Structure formats: structure tokens, C-alpha cells
Amino acid sequence: EVQLLESGGGLVQPGESLRLSCTASGFTFTDYSMSWVRQAPGKGLEWVSGISGSGGDTYSADSVKGRFTISRDNSKNTLYLQMNSLRAEDTAVYYCAKDRSVVVVTATDNWGQGTLVTVSS
Amino acid sequence: QSALTQPASVSGSPGQSITISCTGTSSDIGDYNYVAWYQQHPAKAPKLMIYDVSNRPSGVSNRFSGSKSGNTASLTISGLQAEDEADYYCTSYTSSSTLLFGGGTKLTVL
Image 1: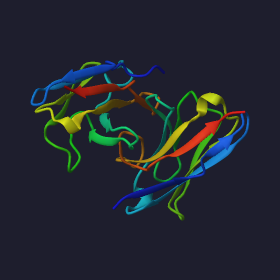
Image 2 (image 1 turned 180 degrees about the horizontal axis):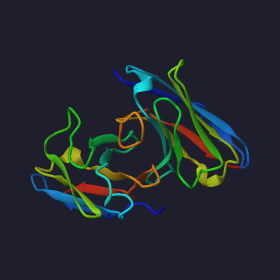
Image 3 (image 1 turned 180 degrees about the vertical axis):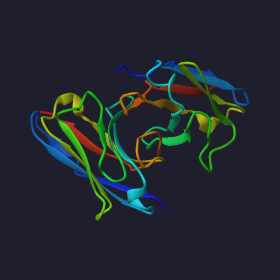
């Protein structure tokens, strides 16, 4: 059974940093691309960043480019999202999601339960 | 990039069929067969219902079907059931190697 467990969310002030982690199990981690998707309170889903199975290719939405960095440690079956220069509009539940593809991000077939990030002074 | 365009809400009675549209551009839906649909119930994580335009993951009811024509993709739910009431989101792969979500559609089963 695929399991994705996010951690690292919390309350931070504008301009601060936070690192999210997602520990994966139940599948061969290196065989799949992974993504972070967020959902602001009462709003829709927004894809944030994706990374290929090898970690050699990363992709990000324009809204976070230059501030957020996605990475993975395949030896630890763990996905990360380093979030810098956080803004109030980054407040959301952040989901870790497994893709169906190994190279690009096409469709996420398994999701974690999400971790809440709140950016407020 | 702007989100894909979905109707804010649709509704139908039990047993009926409904269709949710998802409109993009020639840089996303129009150029790639990587359209997916997700179902999200309140306070739950999204669930993949359709991938690659029209394929259903194992375990998803065959009442759910997907299609695409030009820059517009569609999700059809036949034999509507009470448990289908949820938010539905489309996504598409883009020419920038990113994923783009639609704004979401709230399905109400009357």
C-alpha cells in the first residue's frame, strides 16, 4: 500500500523559511516523479513543484519560482520542499503526491493527507 | 499561467448524467494527452479519477469517463449517486513541463 506522510508544517512569519518533508513507502520511490500541491483555505488546488524520479529534473509554478526548491533523497525515500521568503498568500495545506510518470509530472495517483503552513505575523 | 477554466458548479439528480468541462489552450490541453481529473470530498485529499484523458485507475467506477476535443477536456459521470457529490478538478501537462489545475467544479446531487 502506498503511503505518503508529510511533516514540517506550522506557523511562520512573513519572510521566514520552512522545510516540508514527505516520507514515502509501499512503492519503488525512484520509479516515480513526485509533486507538491497546495490548497489555500476554502480555495482550489494549485500545483507547486515537481521532480523526476532521479531528482535530475525539477519543475515549479511561476508563483513560487525562485523562492521554493523541491528536492528528494532517494536513499531515504523522502521528498522535500524548501520554502523561503514566505508570504501570506503561501498559507495553505501542502500535499505530497506521487505521479504516474518517472520523468515528467502528468497525473498524481496517490496523495498524502497534507500539512498546514500558515504565514502570518 | 492562468488556471484551466471549469464551471464553478454543476448539479444533477440521482441516476442522471452530468458533464464537467475544462478549457485550456494549445499550450496545454490542446497539445498533450495528459489530462487528469480529481475528486475531492470536504476535508479529504484529492483522488485521481481519470488520467491520460480517458483512462480510469483501478478501482474507479466505470460511471466516470473522460474525453477531449481540441483545447477542451470533459468529465462525464453517468448514473449519478449521492456519494458523487464533491469538488472536481482537471489538470493538464503544459509546454513548460508543469501541471496546471482548473479552478474546480462543485457537483451537487439534488
